[in-house]
Image (cartoon, rainbow, N blue to C red; front, side, top):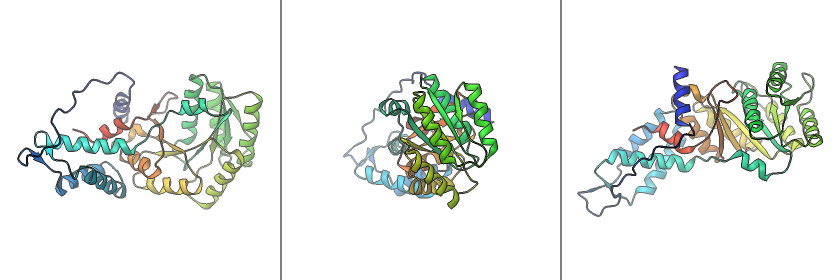
Length: 309
């Protein structure tokens, strides 16, 4: 099943030219009460159910529905294809609240080396995602240095070294248990000496958000002064994703998101919740284990994935 979902997501997010779909030609607004129909509370409840059933948090789903209610209160919809029309309103609302951004453009406009701090809980696929991101940047002619600042796990250091060797990307590391901020500082210093374009800083995670982790991340950010802080999340986290986004944003300050394990996410709603709560762009979705399984985020595609015809 996972391979099926992975292929389905890849197809949805492929760069092939979109088929030109004929726009809905019916006039939304109508002064004729026979021809026109307003969205009722029952209709709004049905739209709410679509969101909740697809793992959008109840809190976020209710706020989205309130937005639709406000935006459409003066509109009479054509009775012809009414259900399709209000689903289009839901898609439009989702597309508006989700943000994408071109990471390459940010890097090219920024100073060198462009420092990216990557944070997140243990087990979300952070280290693997860093390798994928490094591959993406290298493929786009960027010289990358990786800082193995997850010194909490010896395995994380060895894992990054392995990825670096396979990708031909230099990894700066210290011994297990070393000061993570010192590793990052040395990586940035080395990046300056070799005129690297980007420094990717891996960090430790925990099984939950605790004070020790947050203080460690605060110190790394204070020392490195990153151009970008990216929170890596699991798309299969369900409602827990809301608290993760809020806590990391309040304590560390995040600039954007990457969602992992999207190939085994049958719903897609947690992506919407994370984007809404963070109010920051999503750069990529990770859809597999290979280095190339990193897909540029497109809000419309997620809206279509969640709100099916």
